[in-house]
Length: 205
Image 1 (cartoon, rainbow, N blue to C red):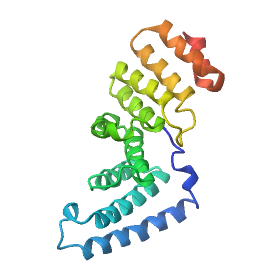
Image 2: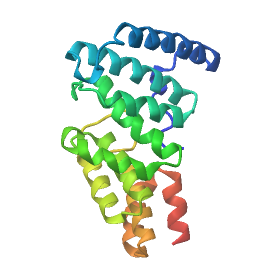
Image 3: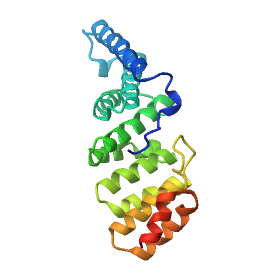
Image 4: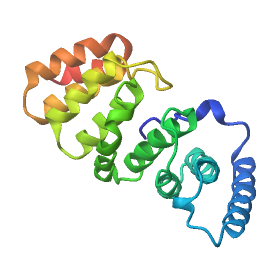
């Protein structure tokens, strides 16, 4: 499971509480859609689109928390279709949540569509790490390594290790997939002091 604790800090209850929250937000979303049934929401004023995006983000986040990643991805994808402010924290989380939902539901290759928003988010370590995982899943190993290198230099986010051991470890995995063991070892050595899986890899190479 990749970035399984991405929304962990937001968890305020057990699964039953989250499922109840989902029911309430689905009702709220249905009421919102009915209220604007005569409008093309994607042509609506920014405030309306922002409200729609936030509702969809919240539903996606809650489905992510109960590990229903396929449904989470659907809500995130729908939300990202609106005209939103890419600097808003929730929009950043929705982009990342979408990517990790795809990865965790075996749809990682679909995540390459997020190349379209790279210019908006490539300064963030979490985003670059996520894109590295997408490229790794897509067997685009060289591009994956580039993204992991960018993650190391990126701005701190919520994913522990994205700026260091996780990116080094998965860069090593990419080099291993390319049958370049000596370069893989170099990455694993950088990750090993802080990541047990990397230390295990060193024993196997």
